[in-house]
Image (cartoon, rainbow, N blue to C red; front, side, top):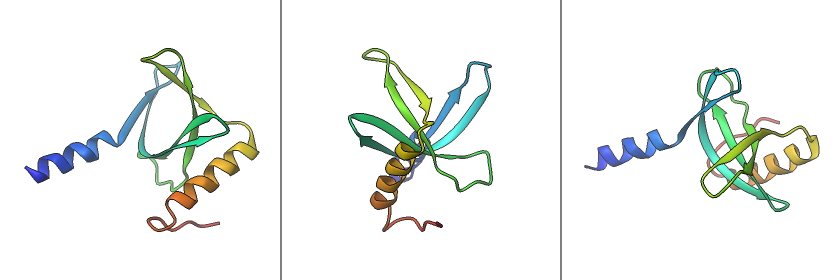
Length: 96
């Protein structure tokens, strides 16, 4: 039973987004970070050989739906990434 629960946990950490063109992108969920009253997702692409963390802003639409927006502001990206690094400093190794 433990193996089944572990498999379910692993599956729940994968998120698939569909863009406006119908293209699917799959990411591993790493963290949800609050910064300046907004929430951001820290994700890792699963389909690429990339170790680059993707940060998206969560924009609530209503109680059940939300949009995920690309963050264009470098200062916000840097601040959210710094929080992410601090949260995972004992788990992950970061290259600067």
